[in-house]
Length: 249
Image 1: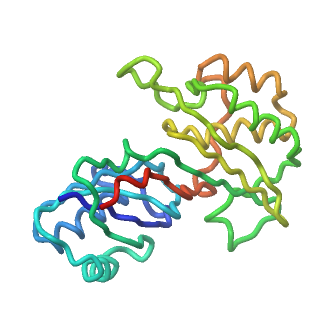
Image 2: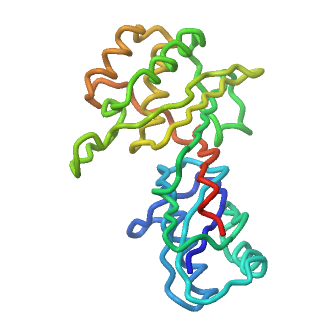
């Protein structure tokens, strides 16, 4: 039987989602605790792979287990064993052919920038001391929706097959609230470090380092070497993942 886990986490002290040797990751903690509680080696597959330091308000993963699960009982015990920075919100049964990553139809990320130093927000936003033109940043954000190939914002080329760097962006905009800026981007999929790369480049548009025309040329170049440095990871949140309704039992 296949089960979905819905969770959230503070990514500050983790080296991202994916299991890696000799470092602490989200996936590693969940697999270890599930395996201990279910008394069987459990492998989980996440809906995506967040970078080191990136947070998630909503993430999903799936795993297979032969027996029925008392979801509420397992949920309580799992949260007792997991680090305080990871919370499992729900565990539920889905169809056996449903995949946490490949069946997701939309993903939403948000990024937070503050323009005033605040020691209580430093782990969840980028203190950016530049004077930023939000109107230009929104023009650049809107331009993204005219393109599908985002090789320019992909940290590592995927050589598996052609056109694998294509994404459909449904929404992309900045909004100012009090003393911070919030960037929202929604797409069917994202490439490695794509969101942070886009944000770093758009911030350079906002501070006048890059023109709108240059930004467009960066997208068209399909070359990661032309984009700006990545925005810091701690301001980024995976906010929501959407699935078709027919995956649920």
